[in-house]
Structure formats: C-alpha cells, structure tokens
Length: 336
Image 1 (cartoon, rainbow, N blue to C red):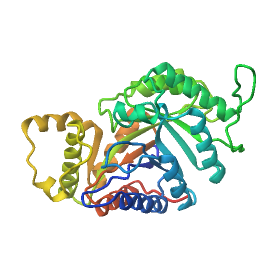
Image 2 (image 1 turned 90 degrees about the vertical axis):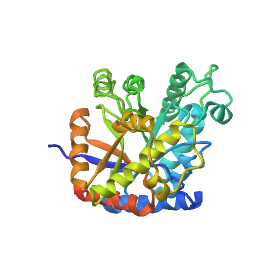
Image 3 (image 1 turned 120 degrees about the vertical axis):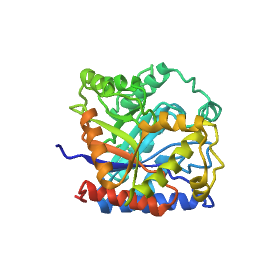
Image 4 (image 1 turned 90 degrees about the horizontal axis):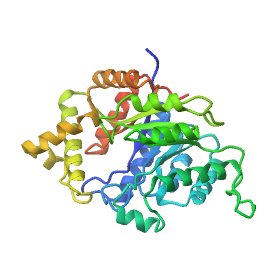
C-alpha cells in the first residue's frame, strides 16, 4: 500500500461566543502544529458574507502563515478567480513566491464562495460565464510566464519578477473543472467535502486528457474531504453531530447564527433532517484513528491519489487539535 501524504484545509471558523480575531489566531496556531506534526500543505479558503467563517482573504492570511513556519507549503484553497482580476492574483502570488520561494500553492476555484450578490460586489464585471473563467485562467498563465501583451504589442508584466512561480491547482467538485486542469497542465484537487457523490471518473478524465506543463510534467491529483478523528467512537460521534448540524444550517441559508456546541449535542434532528444528513454522509469521514486511517487509505486507492487534504470543523479548538494529532500518529507523518 502506497504512502499517503496528508495536508490541511483551514477555514478559520468563528466558534460560538468567539471573535474573528480568535478564529484567525487559531488558524495561525494550527499551521504551526501542522508543520510540527509533518503535514505536507496548509491551505486557507476564501469565503464572504458569512460571520461563521473569518477567512475572506487567503492571500493576506498566507503571509502570516508562511512567516510563522519554515517548511510546510502554504496555499489557497482556493482563490475564487471570478471574484478577482487575473493580473492582481498573479501579482499577489508572485509577491508571496518572492517572500517564500518554493513554498506557495495557488489553488483556484470558480465558485463564488458566497452568494451571487456579494460576488457581483467583489467584481462588478463578473458575468459568471465559463468562457470568462477560462479567459482569466489563460491570462493568469500569460502573467506567470511573462507572455502577456496588449493588442498593440505592449508587454504587461506581473510584478515583482521572480525566478519561480507558485504551484497552481484547479479545484473541482462536479468534474467539469478536471478537463480545465488537464488543458492547462495544472494540478487537480477533487472536492469531495463539497460533493460527496464525486467519482474516480473525474480524476481518470483529468489524467487521460492531461497536457504536460513546466510546473507539472505529469498529472497530479489530490482529494479533499472533511475528517473528524477522536480517541473514542463516542467523541467522534459528538464531533460528527456538530458537523451534520452545520451542514443543515448552510443548506437552510443560515451562515451567521448557530447554537453552541452543548446545545447542538442536545438537538434532536427531524426525519427530514436525518435524510439530508444521510445525503451528505459522503462528504465526511469520522471515527477513531484506526477507522479514519482505513477509510482515508481506501479513498486514496479508489481515486488513485497519494495525497489527501483534510478539513476539520470541530466544536472547539481542543477537539480539532486532537483530531490532527491522531491523524498524524495514524499515518506516521514526519516533518522532513
């Protein structure tokens, strides 16, 4: 059985009765822990108009995270490209690569990371068309390769100039973006934590159509999923109930006001809610470290990936920290 690398996606969740500042501080402490434990990458997400998630500007938070660590790769999971100018993204990540050469990942998505109204305010020219997204990706490659020119043949450079560029990864939850990743010769991250029904065919399609690039001579795919790990099965079930409750709130359009951890544990799900929980079950792996390891290894074999990115939304910082520690123990991760 091949060795699986494990990485972390952190969303800077603002727990009940906590502040956004405390959520960001927890993210900073978590990246330090991840490096000590031997995780490969640490990515942060882009979300807007939700008081539950403080991570709205991954490119800014990444500076703090990279500066607080020495070797772990730091990335965006992801930059929602339609919310931004392609040139500004190129310059932001060239600056990051200049500051922390060889450690920066640029994960790119096309979902808004918010509602459409907020997305339109972030980028008033966003028309939500796939053609526009592809054009932005094409421009981004030109900016990173210094091959961007105006129609009258004037050169446009993404500043600062540096010898290396960040690794680029396309995020895909439904499969359509796998073809885009292969076309541009970029890495692929399959977001099973968003779509629990995604199949290995997404990665097969990516590999079959892959066009080599300077960054990726060979196709490289990863899987992303929610993982909750605990010392006992009882504790794992408590953590799972918190996650199930959060999913239901999101689906109901509630991104701001939640019950606290103790209230959630006492909450009784309706029959309709239990059906939705069953529907969402493919997005989460939970249990003791032995169970979690077995399921993650099975996932890696099924999808033919050797790296899995885990996201852990726990009801408190202690449970989340312990979950990362147990997974590191299970996979015998080492800081290299």
